[in-house]
Length: 113
View 1 (cartoon, rainbow, N blue to C red):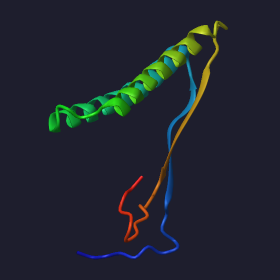
View 2 (tube, rainbow, N blue to C red):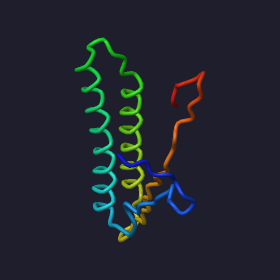
View 3 (cartoon, helix red, strand yellow):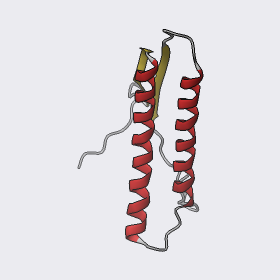
């Protein structure tokens, strides 16, 4: 196994332009709904995996995140449907920011946030 030391030139932050452009109401609704649905499904799978490992596990955090995402999806659809101007387009910018984080370990505290 090779241990690689980080150098100054290694990238620790990456941006991914996931969505960028102008869309019709129907396209915007589909894109936003599909992205949020994927994230909801991710958390539902996590919740199921936790439950399979321990039927008494606490899923309050995952349940809360799922509820937040469902509410955001509802608000986005409401926003789109309230724009009654004929022929309007919706500019959507969705950038993921990925940052490398290393947990801070000490000899006294081994917990990671």
